[in-house]
Length: 263
Image 1 (tube, one colour):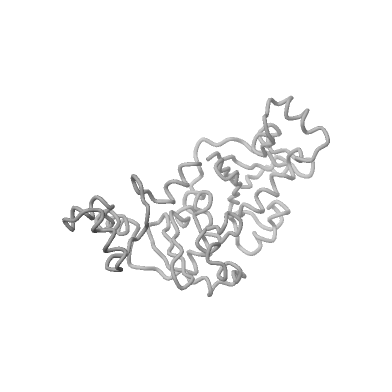
Image 2: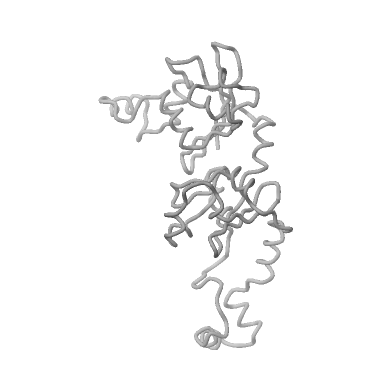
């Protein structure tokens, strides 16, 4: 993950922080709380007026594309070759331009550390999310709270998600834990899930402890029961034992940890 300070040179004010997650090529913008609808970038003025300071990735990429060479530029191949780029890369072009745009005086500057206001907001970002039965999401947050969210209670139109089981079960944590996403295209902000969810008296550590102590693999299960793999398979076939997940090979990992390792 890379992060940059956004600064308005014309008005000499700090706008916020741009975060770039390489794994998903996602741009998230954290606006400073001191901004109002007059000092915020025009694209985000309406959000700021409503008290929303975290810009989601779909708006973040639009802001970036206003400031770089478009991919359909007629001589784009020559431009890529001149900059020794093998493919079109929004972040590379944004760095080359310093974030400058003819429509305003904003620039970007690389940061060494994330500002405190960003770190504080990220406390309510997702660590992991699990789609459960009854169209509910089990959400684990950075501040170690666990919340269960009923998707039917949200104002977002999720009917097509709830009616498609494969789409529903594709739910995973998005870049930096800023959102949960279905099929990597339909996003629910972490802030919405945090506000809407029912807090449970559990933590992620409790689920780690449960998984570590109560999810034996096939070899461990045979040792526990004192039987062979064939005996165990027979008990499964007879319905006496139900596997949590079939055909597991090697170690088991949390999906959220794997996805975060890409950034």
